[in-house]
Amino acid sequence: MKGLKLGILAVAIVAMTGIANAGGVGYIDYAKVIDNYDYAKQVTKEVDAKGLEMQQYLVDKEKEYKSLDTPLKKQTFEDRVSQEFKAKESAYLSLREKREKEVYTKIQDAAKAVMVEQKLDAIMDVRGVFVGGVDVTQNVIQKLKASK
Image (tube, rainbow, N blue to C red; front, side):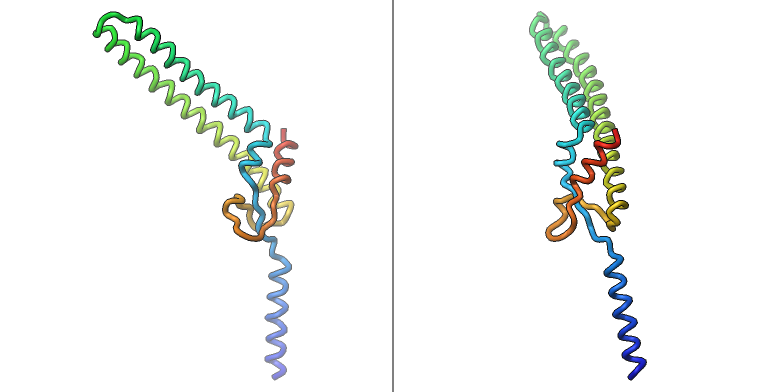
């Protein structure tokens, strides 16, 4: 009987210690972080500018196309513009992917630092949290602003 009580007490102590050492889960509002992160705003402007350049390119080429007088010239022009546009589109998509990855990596690094500082087990996006957790969005934003 004494051994059983001692065993139950030992299990209770281990259970309480596990609860005391649990860091919990944090979460961030990624959209809010992006909206408050100057580098992300800069990247968005850069990518948007490239997208507008592509649109302007098409508008300019459409004007040129309308000035052509023979079907052969038009066909040759269409083929050349199509190839040029594919190259521009590929460069645009590559730039966008590269810049978005840079922003994501910087946010992830800041979130990792906050996770360590707050002694959390994980940080999730707010959309993945139904109930509970600790909102560390502002901590991540502050960490990003401090890392300029």
